[in-house]
Image 1 (cartoon, rainbow, N blue to C red):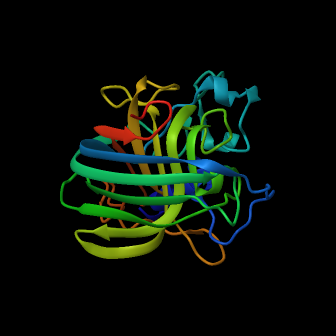
Image 2: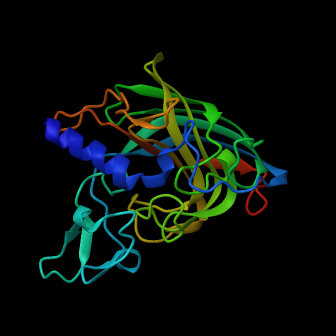
Length: 289
């Protein structure tokens, strides 16, 4: 049981969440000159049914990851962390489990409210970006309710751009080298990185939790299957991700999210990834009103 927990946490931290797990006093390898823009203000609300991602293996896109004879993206997903087909000709899935599979469960009654001001185009310790976020949701059992509250943005990423903490209308994931390639390349109308508080059943149970949020093209189908491209580019999907990582003065540290949700193997799920679908967005220059 302990080995299963280690596998889940290790894969999520080291490989699957990759560069999104953030910054807390750690400068990126290259600091770019601060660029301040006129600013984009967007507000997003959603309520109703959604989905909860359980740990599972992710199918590997051959266009992104290549073949065993010609592997690609090995810096983001080493070959040792990939399953290979019986005939040895292709990669099939990740070897370990994480939050980007088709192992999902429906959840009900969630709400989310997001407000952002994207004022700084690129990473800067003096970023002027602003954001508020509050999200509520349940686990698949319905026995635990959660609230996530953003406290502070992370203005600089250690491995790729965090766009000053808030990015608007940016391409991410897939082949972009922004975030994990285990999610398809997508247009993210709002993306933010920060840390904040986690409540469970109305009790504050943890602080300084890393939070990553995207309001993107809809990646999952009507039956919530995740493929290698956007399922419905004209619809929206909100992702709220809390990896098993906390912010600290010396940088991000591995720490399971205290979800209280026990998996069938008896292990407490160490991350949160939920999606919302009944979405109203205002202010985006592409699709907002």
